[in-house]
Image: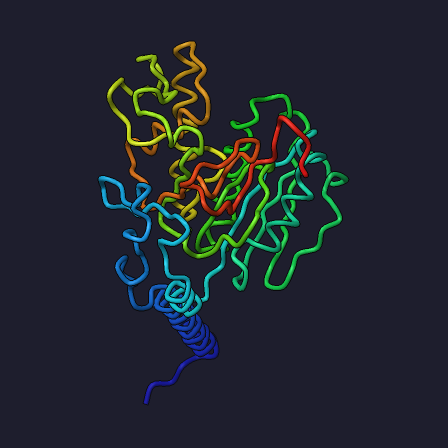
Length: 320
């Protein structure tokens, strides 16, 4: 018979406990992975592109373009409710933007964004006093962050993307399954749900969707990191609404920041939206949202836009 000393017994018990903890953690990871994967949903199970012959519903790389009438809510709801998902929605509101738009954005998002699912709102302000008196709804959580005063003066979109990237790395990637970033001057008009989920989600620009590719305002200077040659390009994407998995959003942010640095070294300054379009030109999105998801209501919608889901706050006249 082997006799263990008190010290050896304690070490044995400690190793046994660590092994048990390791097994439990492994089982938790497997359970979460299995729960979130589930049975794979095929595009044909829920997508009905033939119902909208008046618009582009599928890209050349076979990604769906989501319009009202092209998706089956019941099938999507049944699939995603079994996956126990958490969604994230990031909004960046500093200065007058917070004063003018933030309260209405949050009130509308509470009512219409991913209702019935867990949602974390990531809200960045420059002053906690600018956070409106809005409480999260059922299954919703607000995480409010403040921006350091010494960097307020920098480029707005550069600040916004760098700030979001830092939060994704620090904690967001472990908190949500899908993440969206939206401009604060948007108002949800109706439900925006799981039909928008995808690994990489891009928003078609409401104005440029109806224009010719040759007229798109891509960056045309060859020395810019955002350069897209004439005759190239698929769509013009709007920077006000972008999403996907946290990792895919982080990939976009990292490429944008690298592009900004490259342009700065070359004495250039291209817009965030141009860098966004270059990114999606090289890295095709897996799902596209129609202009219904970001329509400027100062313009009367054409027949193709039958159902406005998200409206841009009008700049030419007061909101009704």
